[in-house]
Each structure stands twice: as C-alpha cells, then as structure tokens.
Length: 184
Image (cartoon, rainbow, N blue to C red; front, side, top):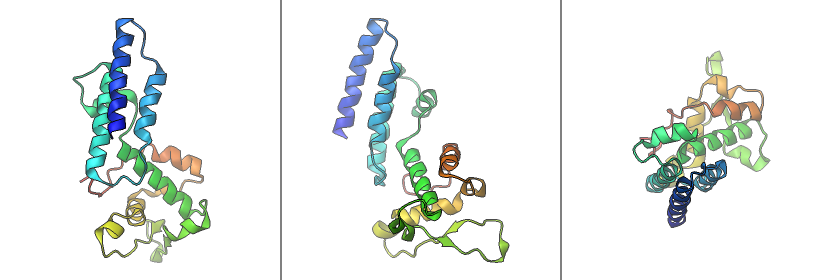
C-alpha cells in the first residue's frame, strides 16, 4: 500500500506541473492510475485493505482531475472507472462463467459446478454452494462467494452465448447482490 500512496504523491506533483504550464492532463496518466489500482489481485478479501486501496484511488483521481471537493463516487463516474472490489467481482463472475461452461482448464471445474434444477423452475443456471464449516476457508472462499453471486445473477447475464458477450454484460452489472463483509 505504501507503493500506491507514493505513486499518488507523484501524480499530485505531475498534475501540478501540468496545470502550471497549461498542459492538458494526458490520458496516459489516467491509464497509469488505472494500472496501479487494478494491479491489486482478486485475493484481497480484507475490508481494511480494500478501504486503503479505495482511499489511494480517490487521492489519485483527485490529483488527476484537480477536484478536491467531489465524492469518490462522483470521481469514479467522471473517470468512468470502478472500485477495485467491483472489478474483482466482475473477474470472479467471469471465471465462474468460464468454469461452468468448461472454457477453463479441467482442474478448475471442481470449484464451480452446476446444480440440477428440478421441476423446470424459472432460474435454470445455478451453482452448487459448497458446505462450509469455517469462515476463512468456508464463507470467505472464492468457491463459496462465487457460487452465491452466480446464483444471484439474472438469467439474462448467465445465459449469454460467449465469454466475450458475458464480459460485456457483466460490466453493466451493479454488484448489489454481493453479501461479503466488504459490501455489508
């Protein structure tokens, strides 16, 4: 996290120079911010680490746009970007899609398996939710969280015909179905 904070300090300095010389903030700088924020991996499930990344992201966006009054959500809208947690949820749902449709390597197939839905219910694509005994290796595991989120997705998104179209659809998903400790 120290690395992210030092990078946001560099962005402050660079944008100050850009503003003094009346040079427009380049999109390369914006891409740089996106890169160092998105380089956090999917394994971050800790609320404190997530909040720290969001705080660093907010500081970098404030420096990038010279807007120190707007909220983090307003800055994200302006930048057309997402929080790291939202990006991680999209990545997780994409991996579940790829695994259920056997687009991932075979060793991944055991993490997310389809559940047989009897009686022709409206919801047709469900994942088996693994039984859990602990919090660390159970409730907070990727297979448990991924299965819960997958089951909460609409069938419109789940029944897309290709991984490319699924990725396009999942980008518009709001992630409100997430019940992890970061979202609650």
